[in-house]
Length: 106
Image 1 (cartoon, one colour):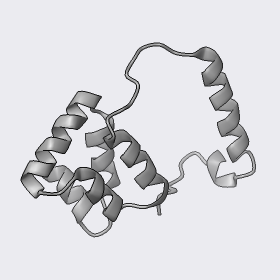
Image 2 (cartoon, rainbow, N blue to C red):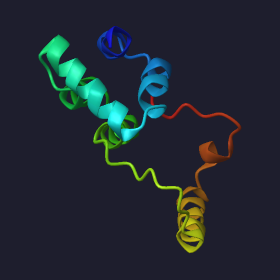
Image 3 (cartoon, rainbow, N blue to C red):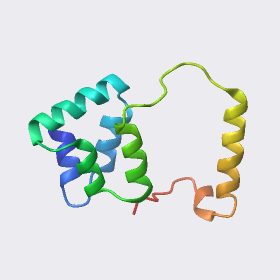
Image 4 (cartoon, helix red, strand yellow):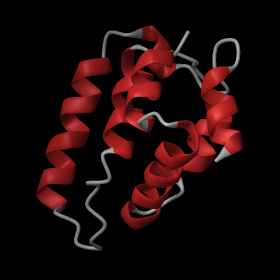
């Protein structure tokens, strides 16, 4: 809990720590983290994320912390194809998407 708070609270924020903590947890674990964060810091984790992040990083963190990620093992192949085409088309004319590594959160 302390690591997550410090990662959000420091100058800027430590994206690697935030990602490691939040993106590797299931919905139940996220709910426990949120409850413990509220108890320890008297602040909602979502509010802290919203006040300390911005742009796409804020959007994805807010989505993850909502704890409503589909955790089923079912894969809709047709939807995956449609999503892949949409993502490809959205980035087709953006050079930075073709780079081997891009840090777009700055």
